Length: 72
Image (cartoon, rainbow, N blue to C red; front, side, top):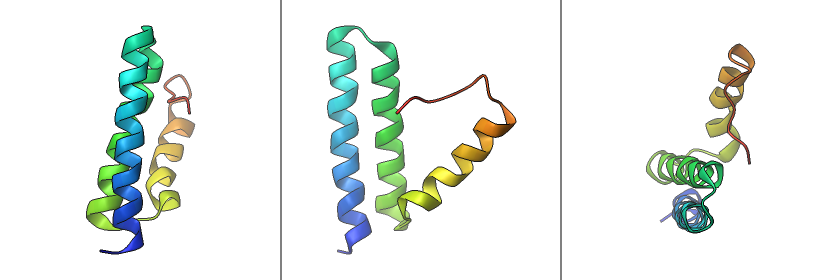
């Protein structure tokens, strides 16, 4: 198991916790951010991609559509 896969699993766990916390406090944006974190973690685990490679396409989408944003 390589470093990217381990980091991907850790990122998924953090995302689940963040999503759960967002639901507990009733913060939809926090829950959505947790889902995003889980998704990026799955990509990193399955494809061994680095964080920068995963977030580049999202940053490009934000430039094209500035009204739609994920908050970190």
